[in-house]
Length: 380
Length: 99
Image (cartoon, rainbow over all chains, first blue to last red):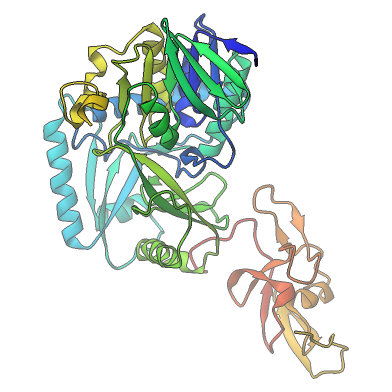
């Protein structure tokens, strides 16, 4: 019989979502253990574009817009705190973000969408300005814009960070604060009796009263073991990155951004191909064309790498925070905006999860919105 | 697949390394021209700006990236010289806007 390790809280999943929750829970008096699977698992956290993105959030769910905005506001302190604890600079830059429009129709549609968003979310303090081509050119002096660039929407709260350094900083920070991180611990079975969850992973077993599933695509199978059937699917995103170039782009962009090291990231596709992590020539060509449609001078830059990741998507694209009704104490946390929400996951969601089942404040993010009056496990 | 090493017997050409004329032989590489011109550093590294120079001379190490005829990030050791070719040091991080 292998040893059974006990803690107050067991988090399954060491990606950005699980690790941000671990950081937020650590240092509050509870013992926290985090189980992380294999390096070869589908890891959205390692394929991330790295945006802290506000302007497109909330169209279908105002609560998500407000939640996102608050996370963006928390980000400077969050990054400073991570740096103080770990010495790791995650290269946070929140100088605002641009979403480019190609063609006049796209700019018109963008104006309409932003007006609808502003009307929907009250009080909505994120200011999104739609810029025409001349206004955009004034924001980017000295940069040649492609002939079809009609403008862009700009949101001052948008920003970016290095997602790989973020993941590393979260893990270093967790260890420093006493979280027991078990790597290569692939959870295979969960049972529940007398209010205690028992998770088997490899030859070890772990027990806790509070169980948080933050395993991305892995949560699908794990959720079923605790009465949580979640409607998440994989959406492939391919990304290109160029060689390091002299800094020219002082703002983040939703499809093109320049990192602190000078590389230009170009993304991303939205493909329904199951769990296929491959890259394709067609997508590489269309992403490169998109980038040169916006900045023609990028044609001389060398691409050095292309990769793909699988977003963890709910049907409406918004986060899902679900408490199990059949297995009280188990919660499932998933979203595709792990970087953007990392700050608020650590600051607000983590302590709320520690305090007990998520209450009314989190109702908007619950599974009920996908149909059925109860738990999705019964609705599905 | 195999190529005879240049032995200097081919026709002589003139290229410009950092604007200075350098006499080379047909079959030489741009990196050879830069070394013949006495350039000790052919680029500055992308992050630290440290001096770098051709190293493997066979297309593997990417240390010899230079600006050749206005195009940045060329592997100078793989580019054969042409009459009048302009070969220049590569700055730490090339600019996207063409000069």
